[in-house]
Amino acid sequence: MSTERAAGSRLANAERQRGHVADVALADLTAAAKIADGGQGRVFRLASPPGVLLKLYHRGVTVLPEELGRLIDLPGDRRDLGVAPVAWPVGRVFDDGRCVGSLVPEAPAEFATSLAGRRRLLELQFLLYPRRAMWADLVLPTDTERRGLAVAYVELFRVLHGNGVVVGDVSMRNLLWTLATGPAVFAIDCDGFRLAGRPPAVRSVDTAGWTDPARPPEVTVDTDRYKLALVALRVLLGNHEVTPEDVCRGAFPLDPELTALARHAVRPGRRPPAECWLGALGADL
Image (cartoon, rainbow, N blue to C red; front, side, top):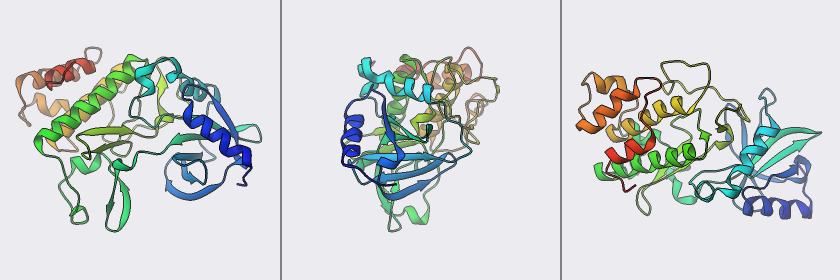
């Protein structure tokens, strides 16, 4: 990848102007470092502008440029979505007429830490497993802070669903958290989101252990609501395997209101929306 003076300006505009599709040629970009390599693609930190990442898709990944453009455009006139704690894609990257990547903002610094001498994002997984030796220096939340993080994740789903956005794939890798200034969360890999009723720009496979047991043919807000229940219950209980079904069987005692929500969460078509979870968690609506 080579660089041109104009590329930095176009990228800066893309970063500033959420809700405007910015198309950039791959040849105009300069990668400073590769920072991740996942199932969909490799992620590079760019030399310019600061705070913008390039997600370069693997050749076998199908990208729908029109849907990616719709996703980028969405926050333009939706203020609550535009300020949501997500790495919302801000631009498309083309090479020889083919969409090969997307531009995304980097997660804020407070959503990362140093573990065993290297930088690590504060992924949801750290909240759901017993403390490991390499996590010795990691400050984990108190019970009160856990509840605050659960509220923050549920609020994120509320904002997305309220704007017609379906998360789809939920995993311990794409949901981040921090206690730096109080419990807060951040979502990455948002190019896998989709507009309700439309195909995803970049199709992803459900992460094992985070699937809807009803196995519907399409990803919908209802399937998201089951995964929302998984996130809320797992954060509250600090357990990576607990399901609403487990709570219904009495395996994990919770207060009556949360238990009632878990009972509804196992019923496709009757799953509680985010507002119900916020009420049960005592959040200010």
